[in-house]
Length: 320
Ligand SMILES: [Fe+2]
Image (cartoon, rainbow, N blue to C red; front, side, top):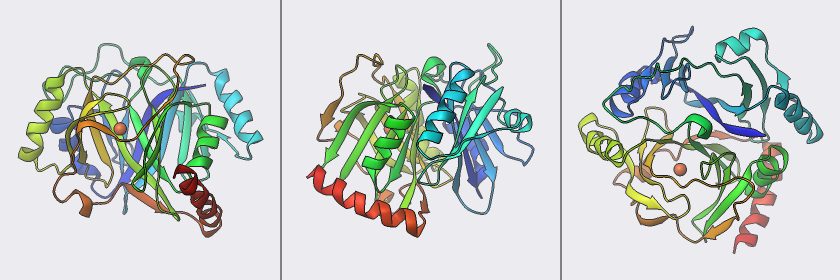
């Protein structure tokens, strides 16, 4: 029922750095700042898609998901309730703050705040990229995709697929190194990915933004050195979604995958697959990348962590 990634909200002390990072490097457009001084970035005609709020520490503030019909919000609320998760209906002021018509909010078992929204405001033919690029792939495919890290990927699958309805596209399992799952909600190969991490923590690894041409990726790659943007993974092409992309660190601990030519799937017809590596070629770890944070991580409560430690062990042995 969730149809796309609508927006992403981040708290960060370096929020102001996103003005230049977002526009001059990524090619996003600066929107009017938020009431708290947040930097708001557009990648299409939507009012904004990425909002970086001033804060003392990096944190994932909220992940916004779009539905096609207003009634879907009630259906998702009921599904969450049956799974023991309480969703709150946002007030009109809450909806206005996100430039949507209506929303519900809830916290998942790993402490991420989600907002499911209907009626995201857009101003047709108003987007102007922050640097000369051909633009971003959005529309029915939404903002892009996010990769969330959690210690118990089986529980993650049960929640995001079983409760929220994300459909499995594939798994990438590299024994001892990576256990990840990829889910679609529209034609984009994946809108959500889950990666298994160490017990006791969870986090946001990256946001993927897809541009319309290979040259848009290439010019950003060239500009990374000029702008002092630290690269995480060099150019490469993924096995599963065939994305031609590179990864860089943002001013706020998580990463951006900047890509072109991602695979499109047909929801309801796609048959999930399993891969043993992430890249057909490239995506080499760049110097210094391992010393930087893997993403915006947060600690899980002892109770949650204890439950998930046990399940993570089971999951690890199942993967082998
Ligand atoms: Fe990605």
